[in-house]
Length: 248
Image (cartoon, rainbow, N blue to C red):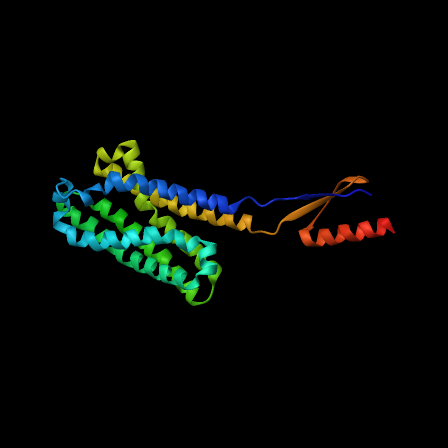
């Protein structure tokens, strides 16, 4: 009796992860010259806008940059396995960056109410900051309890919220909506924040699918409709036994 084994191959999760990192790199490459070029141009007119809260903006920017740059390192399996101490240090810096950048980001937006920004934009900034700190805090609790898998899941959620900073600026800049009104920018923030909640769940479910045990199917010519499913290892043993009996 002939037997056909059909292995369900796992999709290349690493390739998908690298594509995600490439997308983050492209967003950074766009945002830095488009939104942050004033940092190397002291005479840029935007400095007049930032002057009243520039000393709050400095730690916010440094902490946020650390979180955005170190965040991807937390998802590198190779780095985590080979350089555990570096992984821990980078993780602690990321956490510190979150708990500095998030509240300062809210305060800066609240400060700009004196300059004409609506209260609704401050509420959006508060929701963003709260969600970022909450997801990060839950990740800390899980790793302190030794629950690594849950810790990774909540770190994924935390970094998805962190990316709202880049996503909002890319969308506003590419579409030109950033020049419409402050309400357009506020809407972009809310949309990106909502999408971050959905996107992190999609990533987690994708990871769960990719890491589930591979399944094989065996079809018998005598009964074409019969399908048996079991882990790969069990079927390999079954096939070897069947071959031995046939030879005998």
